[in-house]
Image (cartoon, rainbow, N blue to C red):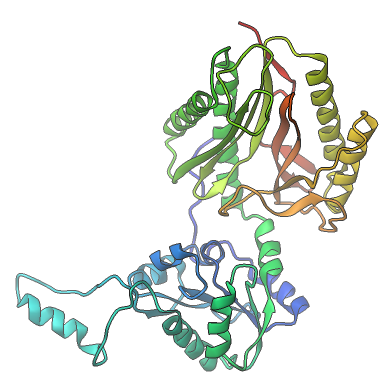
Length: 422
């Protein structure tokens, strides 16, 4: 396998035809993307440092319902030129942020004269905001909507992201726009992955699995959660170097040692449960894989819990088929736990989509009553966790690509409860 995943092309990963169908169902003429991850997904471009405050007034991208109508954007002036080049969007407006930028051509001419000439378009009294000014971004967005004849339209906005204070600014700047919540629509767009996204998730799963295999093989009495995490990350980074990874790499780890199940714990004593839930993040796309081990021989209680979870995971995997609702897998896994004797067991979800977000878990979830149908090119993590304080934290989790035929395992590791015998 190569680590040279496909690069984002202008336009990002947005499927305009799918977006058009979803917008028709919502009854909107366009959507306005304001969440940084959604803008990156739709355009392939970073919307600027102002978006790091995670406020809805920093940048926006207009996606018309008509696939033939081009996208438009407004971003901070520091990144406007790069955003235009990377995204391929011709209509990119800008608004000033706190970073002072100008241009000059020394040493041939006068530095000050060059700067003043470049800045001559600034209005009298120009002054940069302390960070960014949402009213300036919204003024730019208002111009875009007015020119497109959308300033009185019903439009979608990611209301799951927009703070109440920012929503007031949107309503003030665009009083005739009728806003609808587009957060579920955007989530449905992002749940079906494009080839380059799948490749990034495949590499992330490969790195995660390699690191997890190494960490499990390195367990011993006396080890603690911090050391396990360092072992895992070290192997992930080593594997990334071997693959000559051409994308950004980060990672996360939830590791617990001992009978609590949530606390990091350690040093490990004989009989302790070790739960390792980890993910490498490649180009912003996070894997999610987990396994459980015991230092020394497993006790009957530990074996009973893990065997039940293994049965629940197997039941969920049987139920996960393209075209079937995710809720069926939750029902099957819950029934398996109850049949194994854990009649009071109640788990909110047995897995989730994975992708590029601020968290490893994305919508949709394998949850009770979820009517979302499993579709080809979704990438999901299927998990069976149970945290029994006094015994330990247990989890089995794997990552899968959904194909027309079923599930393709992206994280091949044994699912047995590993016994660590010195």
